Image (cartoon, rainbow over all chains, first blue to last red; front, side):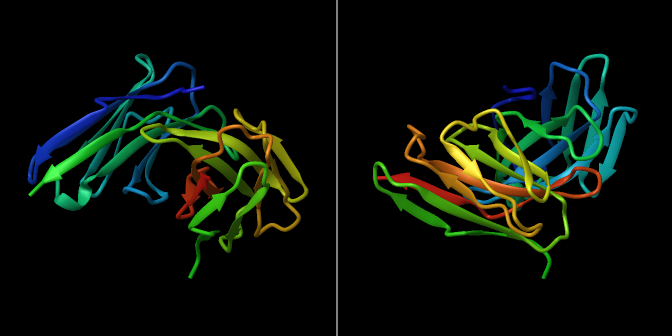
Length: 112
Length: 111
């Protein structure tokens, strides 16, 4: 069953612009993670935010989490063509070796 | 080089055949996972294992089987009972905080 739902399904921007993707989920979580997938490749872990955290940064990435609204957002600042990929959120309901439930992803296209 | 490998990259299967997809990791992770991805879709969990000689069914285990005889290896067999096996299969292992590390995937096509 899908826990996370990303919005929008697809996003097209120019290099240098910011890209914002949203994720909503249904049940209580221990942590939420964002992954990137280039076409035909495996997923790459970007960032993990725990349920007691509200914001986290990693390089050009900024993730927020609002547990009261059961939603998260991923902001990529100053986008580059190399950021073109699909982005997935995934939720874990337990700490430790918990299974992850993935959304369907947002496809981001960054044009030069 | 630490990482997770999958083989083969492409696999073709005839109707009625069983095929086995390989997944190996040298990250010393206890937990390993198999996912299926269909076009334009997210990942769906097939099987997972948190320790050697133990594994659990995920959301779509029917028609699949796994084994976990070694910590490093978690092969997936797609049996003839799986009615629609054409998909992209991803293997992952989990680190200390459950961030998952993925292999490059195997694309299975039924002829």
